[in-house]
Image (cartoon, rainbow, N blue to C red; front, side):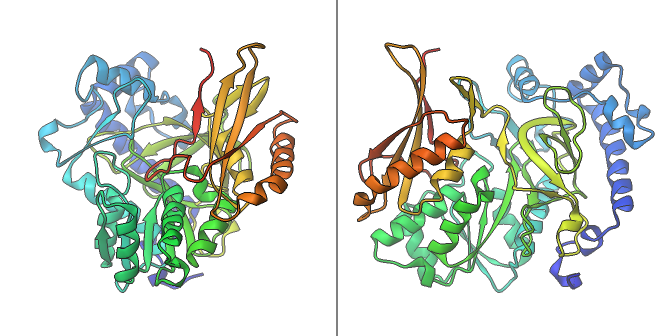
Amino acid sequence: MLTADEYWNPKNETMPREKLRALQFGKLRDLCAWAEARSEFHRVRWAKAGFRAEQLRTWDDIRRIPYMTREEWMQSQDEHPPFGTLPAAPPDVAIRFHTTSGTTGRTPLRALDGLRDWEWIADCWAYGFHAMGVRPRDTVFIAFSYAQFIGFWGAHYANEKLGAMVIPSGSLPTETRVKLIVENSATVVCATPTYVLRMAEVARQMGIDVAKSAVDKIVLSGEPSGSVPAVRRQIEAAWGARVGDTAGMTEIGTIFMFECRHQPGGPHIVEDHFIEEVIDPETGRPCDYGERGERVCTSFGRGILPLIRYRTCDVVEKRPASVCPCGRTFDIYHGGIQTRTDDMHKIRGTNVYPRAIEAIVREHAEIEEFQVVLSTDAESGRDEVTVRCEMKPGLEPAWAALFPALNKELSEAHENLRFNLEHARQGELPRFELKAKRLVDKRRK
C-alpha cells in the first residue's frame, strides 16, 4: 500500500469495491435523471426503448439503458447542426469548443464544455500524471499543436493543477521542441508514442542524446501502441525514461485510464468518474475478467454532453485491481486498448489488425518507421498486404538479414498469411505528430 500522498485522490482510489460500486450507481441515477430531463437525444431514444430513469433501482438495471453509438450522435449533428440534440445545456454556457481528430468522409464530432466540465477534464488527467510521479518540482513538456482536437489540452491544465511547470509547444517544428526539452531541463514529456519516437529520431540527427537529458518520465496517449511492449522498450531505450500509458476520447473529453508506477501490465480505470463495461460486440453479453470484448463507457463529469453506455469500438480485457500492489481498487485494462472492432481488415480470409503488425515490427529496433499498404492485385483480384520498412540511418545493410525473420514472424502471427515486405528509402515514409496513420488502403471498393 502506498502512502496517502502517492494518490491524487486517496479516498476514492483506495475505496472498497462495494463502496465504489455504490458511488458509481448513485452518480448513474443522477446522470440519467439529468439526461432525461435535459437531453432530447437521450429522451427520444429511451422512450423508444421503453426506458425511464426512475427504473434504475438495482445495478443490473443498467442493462435497461440502450447503447449509444457514434453513428447516432453524428446523425443527430447532421440533422440538427451544429451540435445535434445531445447537449443537456445551451451552447451559451460553454467555455470551450473542440472536435474529434476527424472521421473519414464525415464532419468531425463537435464537443462543448462548461467551466465545471473543464475542471473535471483536468482532474481526470491529474490522476495519470500524479500516478506517474509528477509533482510541483517537475517541468512538463507538452508536444502538441493545441488545435481544435482536444488531445492533450486537458493534460496541460492538469499539470498546472498539480503545480508543475508546463511548457506548451504549439505548432513548433520538432527540432525546436527537442531544443526546448533539453535547454529547459524538462523532466516529463507528454506526446503520442509515434511522436516521442520521432523526437528521438530528430534528436539523433541533431547530435543530441535525449537519454542524457533530464527527462525521466514520459506520459503517452492518443494511440493504442502506448501499451505495446516493443514500442515502450524502444521509447525507454531512446529516452532513458520510464513510460506510462493513458487513453482518452474526445467524446468524453479526458482520459479514462492511467498507468501507475507499479506497471502491472495495464492502466487503471478511473472508476470514480466512469462506469466501464466490457461486452461481447456481437451479442452484447457482459464479459468476465480475462475476456476480450468491446469497451462501453458511461461518463459522469461532462454535464453538457451526457455520454451514457457509449459503444466505443475499443477492444479491451479487464483484470481485477488486486493484480497491482499499489493499493488502488480501480480495475485494470490489461494491455491497454488492444485494438478496435472497426480497425480489423479481412485479407484473404484472415483478420489483420494494424496494432498486431506494429507489435511485431517494433520488436526490431533497426526499423525507424513503417507503413502498411492494403491493395488489390490487378490480375488476380486478390487482396494483398504490404509492410514497407525504413531502416535507421547506417543500418540499411541489415535489411537483407532482417527480411526473412520479419516475414516469418508476420506470417506466423496471421494464420500463415503471406505478407509482402518492401525496403523504403531513408526519409521516404511519412512522420506524424498526433495519431499516426500508417495504414493506407488502396483496395478496390
